[in-house]
Image (cartoon, rainbow, N blue to C red):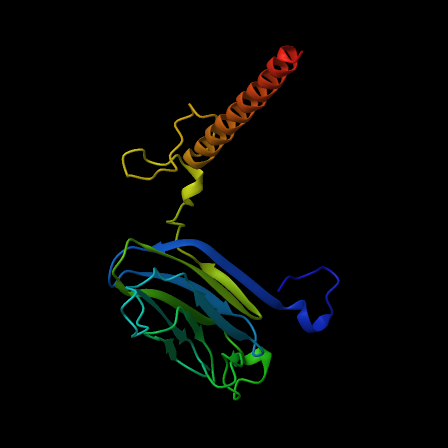
Length: 221
């Protein structure tokens, strides 16, 4: 969803926050994101997604290798829900929702706080937690959307894309480029060498054929 300057009033107060430079490294580690509900009409929805490492081919249990969960708490006078959580053991998509069968956004205010003049901002805390990290580390993406909410505190980014730094030549990765190959991979160099060798053989065969044809023509009476 992308906001445009000419969106109608329905979308005027709709907020979108995207976080995709985070990772969890060990069991029990967590990161906390804080927001504020600024209106009696505030809504809140959080979606967490990540790419789980592949499991053993012989394992058909569909259990996550790395398992991340999210939980939500609301603090202040008039919270509709003080806490919600999503902790699937087989799904790498987690969502905080009011009704899991309809995936509707939930209102963070109680209906009794219907008058904006009586409303005091509510503190919304979203926690991403590593229930289990079995392989390497686990990067994730988090999207928070809702009406009349603002971001108040986010942790510093702790993940850097691997393509921003040179590969380690000692880790056994054949894609390492030390600069001597002009940026070509090992596979590309091998392919070029094979193609060049085939061209040389083809030229040699053609030259031999033409030579033999010329000799026979000169030897005829």
